[in-house]
Structures are given as C-alpha cells and as structure tokens.
Length: 67
Image 1 (cartoon, rainbow, N blue to C red):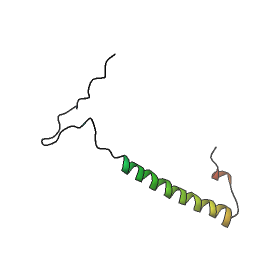
Image 2: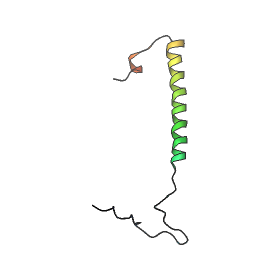
Image 3: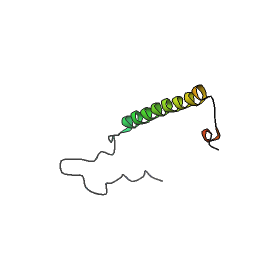
Image 4: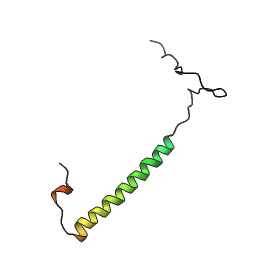
C-alpha cells in the first residue's frame, strides 16, 4: 500500500490564484466564535426562562420537560 494520490481540484483555479493543498486557509476560528456566541445566548435565554418558571411563577409544568 502506497500513499494516497494527491488531491486534484475539480476545476482549475481562477487566473492569479493557486491551489494550496498543503496548508489551506480555514474558517475554524470563525466557527469557534459562532458556536461560542450561540451557546452563550442559548444559556442566557434558558436561564431567564428557568428563573421566570421557578422564581416568578413558581411552577414547572410538563411542557417544560421533553421526553
């Protein structure tokens, strides 16, 4: 078994551009920012809903639990 063949693009790159399969650009930093932001907002909203249900209304009903 040898090394897998080198990837080749489906189309040639636009003029003035070159393909970089060794160290391609990545959007992982923006992915981390997006996931962190969504988790933060979700946590805040869930905490507010829980506070209102338990602290203000003082009831927890079946629709608050998903089975």
